[in-house]
Amino acid sequence: MSLNLSQPLWRSQAWLFLLLGQNKSALAVYERLLQRFPQDHHAALSRAHLLAVLDRKPQAIAAYQALLIEQPEHGVAWFNLGFLLEESQRWQEACHAFEQATRCRPELDRAWYGLGLVLIRLQRYDEAVIALKRNTELQPMSPYGWYQLARVQLERHNPAEAVRIIAHLKGFEPKVAAQLERETGLMASMPAP
Image (cartoon, rainbow, N blue to C red; front, side, top):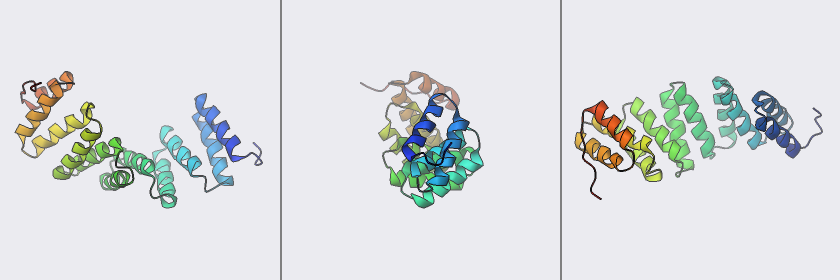
């Protein structure tokens, strides 16, 4: 590939490779693009994402960290970094990344959920409740935050609140509610209409 190609042309080529499912080729284009245009944050974000997709997690983590030095307010990059750190069981670092993601993008429900999960791992249950409640406010019909919220309420020795959450889940996710009842031994009646 000639180094005379413009950024838009290289991006188009990378997009075509992605469309064809050729992630390694797309990654090579982004890496060449970054050699020529090191401040191209879109290319840096795409490169970091592709490294993660290609299961090159240590390199992906380093790529997100480098990008965040340049763009510390990039909430999605913080979320992606947090996700990779969580997968790597680097709980404290993941917690920091998710906190930054929620600070930069308070509407990013997945970041609140990730933060809640990491706080549970760190046994910081009171903080986990706050994060998971925010997640359920942003995604009220998703059972995942509610499920984790019920589990953390049990860890906090608050079975009445867990029962209330199970009853709430019965209204829109009865299978998840039934799973919680089986796992916890708690039974909840349907919420009043």
